[in-house]
Image (cartoon, rainbow over all chains, first blue to last red; front, side, top):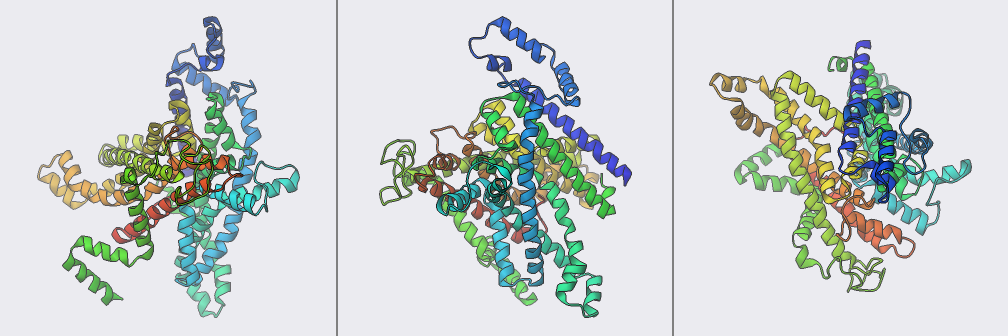
Length: 312
Length: 295
């Protein structure tokens, strides 16, 4: 097990390093001089040369990559082009909003999806099971930004039940502003998770220990809740780790539509203004977040199922 | 039940594969619904020039933000452009992006997958590491990074889709090639002196292409979503070219004055993604029930 953990960590680190290097080289390879973008059309050659030196752009490319990683290890992500504030503190300011959004979305979708999945498995092929199945496929297919705009339209513009824009202030304001965005990010997951729980529940209900429990005369509800659910819920853990990318993507659009602060809004604004250091910092942060969550999911998987450990 | 399937099998053998497929699709109401939506969408894109009543980029063909009427089926947007014409033309853009991007990804993924599955182990490992690296970027974040570098355009969107889907296809092909390379019929081919291109092209390719095509068809809604999403953020198709995403974004800016642009910009996205998804699931169940797409 420990060997597997070690191998997996090395792989995750390698992937992150390659990804960051690729990104860095791509940014440098683009025609156009970042310093020129920064200084505007009226920059003198001296000013440009000075800025080049300050940003390390006068060094050869491999040297720049090394310098970048050197800075990274010290927690230095560079400075925002416009405000000159450190990128690290900007990213860490925005990260909690996105994480809160994603965690709320996960929490409510798990709370709804698990009972729904159990019910679907117990009443297999019933009308409700079929309706849930179709709804699941539909909610997964509909893009999050369309869902977000329609939710905004219905609940904020027409019904005026919930606030539409921003993150709100204070605890209560924060909660009411979180409801709609978290609803939109989580809705696709309700469908997806309920299908996963249904599938694994069906498999487990056919196993020997469940038949044993049935033969003892335990009620079906008790069998499901007590003996099948703890096993059936396991696949959802690993799915959630891998699903981090989907959650992040949904969060980007939802943050933009609801004008919430967060990583998504930050990166979209930075891309709009070609603010390379911020783009670099946010891409790095999200990639690390994603690699870490998939790695953790793999650990959980390996801890539960020894067969996986040999696969790497 | 068993007699029933037997009867179907005989029926199919008698009437040919295509009609058999049509019959099975007809038994799957959701799949049929999806097929109808897809046919409608493709037809409207192909015959767009005949359908659109106005030039989709012409401003002030009517009043600003007019509600739907017989004259303007989906109303008009903030510049007085006919939303119906824009929606139909936007469908063309979406379809063009999907076809180009997925076609490219399919060919490149197939090739890389065959190479990884049949080549030496070091090459296999190197390619796998590359695939995993590309997959480690969340798609939308990768897309935004590419747009920063290449600028917003249709080509960037196509590039992003191709680059992010190639690893998925290549992995599927690789796994299947790997499983096949040691099977007896390949050994027999080798013994008869067949070269690598012949083995790959004639014996392995037909075995891997089917599942791959189903995967690709199921990715169409993802591509349409990505194109519309990037255009919604102002980072996809450049104005004045209409895209479902830009229509939605235009409407979003005026949501307090008129809801029609948002409603009519979103519905085609919803219908198309649903159509392709339902059809894709039906195709998968009919042709390859074992194939379950990984996330």
